[in-house]
Length: 81
Image (cartoon, rainbow, N blue to C red; front, side):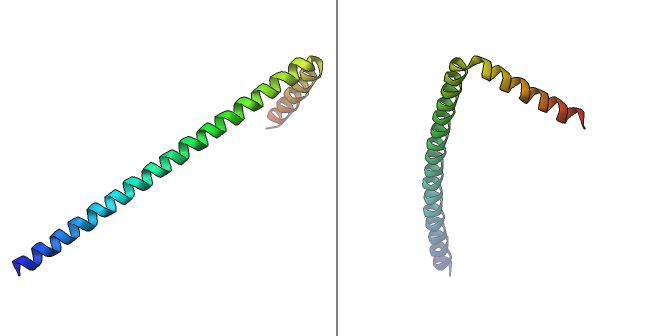
């Protein structure tokens, strides 16, 4: 009986180690995917900021008018509360 219990314990240990290895691999994969996603998001944000900067430089008066209207709408919305 003692030998059987030891075999079961060894088997359980081996299963636990394989499971831990699989979880470690999965966590590494998730980390890589998150890093890739963060890099893509950062690149998209930088492109958007660059495009916005270009548009503001090309049309400064229109940009000021849009900002003023947006500020007025926000002030009106906040005042209503």
